[in-house]
Image 1 (cartoon, rainbow, N blue to C red):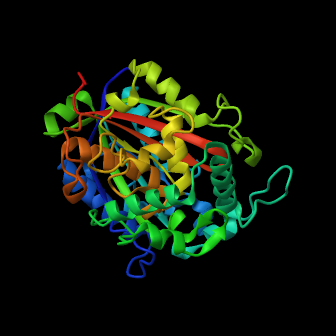
Image 2 (cartoon, helix red, strand yellow):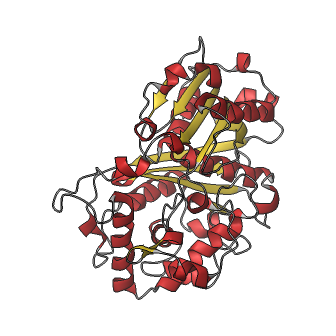
Length: 389
């Protein structure tokens, strides 16, 4: 990139299933004010504002125009971003590229979703499959059910392994004051939760959350002048293509799954040979337990068919050698327009050492984050404590 870019501030709302106390603009404003306060800036110092949201889920469009009183965008240039579940990460990429290009010095990136004001399930259920017409039990649940059953059949994993992921996520969330589902659950609780579409149970899936996240990005000169603990954006990559449910048959381990493609590009840019050793923390976008196990493999944290062994051995626990989602992840908080941005912000907090109760007990100098959306849109961002890391 032409100029180095850093995260110099950020903030998020407290996430919940219901936020009847605020409208969309007021909810977004909570995150914006926290981000500006964290960066030690006023809205007048921000050059541009980028807003990410899956407007289909609320059914109200042009949110960048009618939320200006909540975002602070009045009279400022900017863009509205919509790329599915990845939109929060895409918004960070857009902000970073505008700063790296030299067009702006300071950008405010915002992601939000207020799902109680729409019907996300109804929108997703309209996703058509080219062969079967509709996914079983709705697009999201049916998709991950196919993923889970294929993985079990190919590699010998069991429902207990997905339950381990469910427990890890919710127990981590209990340490995070901003998380939505702070559940004190056991493996038995997960296995006894209601079946949605085999092998996906209720506790295998993410919730429908309301919330927002905002981040202030700046060029190197501004970051070093204004911020004591800047977090540097070292690399970004996006890969996207259609994927059919039948692609989740794991016979061909060299399949062109786009999380693998995206990770390979990222590692080439950074010269990474052993990602599990290079990165200290991972914040991955896992809408379902089985997705996290598979992402382990696609990210190169282990070999094909070994993902469930990592969680079985506690390798990805918050105090393990490869901490994955110490924040509780998407399984605990899923305000879709903000979910992928939360991965970046939570990773930045880990690098700053400011994650509080869910801080990984190790020296976190580098982190990798992922965003995931419909049709396997994948966005990855690599962060570091210094420009030398």
